[in-house]
Image 1 (tube, rainbow, N blue to C red):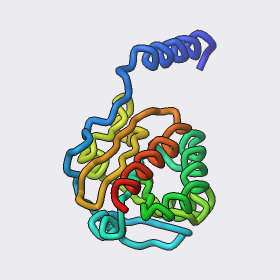
Image 2: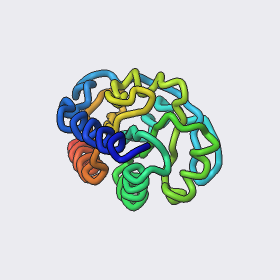
Image 3: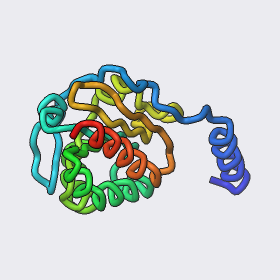
Image 4: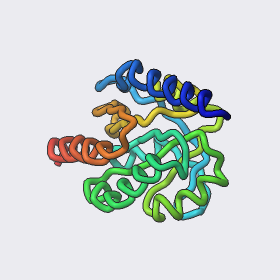
Length: 183
């Protein structure tokens, strides 16, 4: 690619980002969370994750991320890994979902998720589509969207932002609020 082409590509990308619609989760608080099962991995060990089964144990933090081993997704995975014990103390389960295949997630669950929480494969994008968590400018991947789902299958918190740094704090606050109102 020559310098002029590279410059136009850079300008086009910047313009697309600046003109992007604001990020927001489209499943609203109070909506019924779509139940799903998916191949998942925690600590490199594969299993079938069932949202219905996880909700029997308490709220679920369901977060979507674009792709394993990318900068933002690695930061977010590290942040969720560091907070997993705090989520568990409040009775919550954390599950990450991306379009990545299970083999990739086996590795990601060990290195970036630090064996702390499961990540699920959504290669056919059914889960991300059912949660309106598709990245608008690259619809083959998930948007960075986090949900907290109560044990009665209801969305109690939704947040979308490509910046990975706020997701853990915001979902933790929602889980704490739910926990405090359900002694």
